[in-house]
Length: 112
Image 1: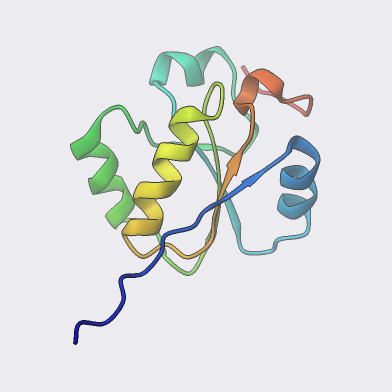
Image 2 (image 1 turned 90 degrees about the horizontal axis):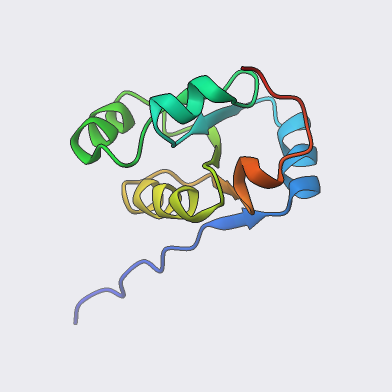
């Protein structure tokens, strides 16, 4: 008998949930999974750019990340963030949190 497959579940947080969790998480890292141009235009302070639309580069950058950290992921609207979280979860990252609505909905601080 083969063991059951792991069911991959990632958590999407509302703006308030994401902010609160991030502020209270001493093991947190923010990932912006948009393009470099989008990042340059505006991003959440402290976010590391890791573009999910460049698959090989994205996977290479994932390999350099510590799997023990908690990753707070965002994109423009939430779709790419969700995709990135699923890939991360599938690759052994247990603590990944997508920002619902992405930076479009973000009412917190932004750098540009």
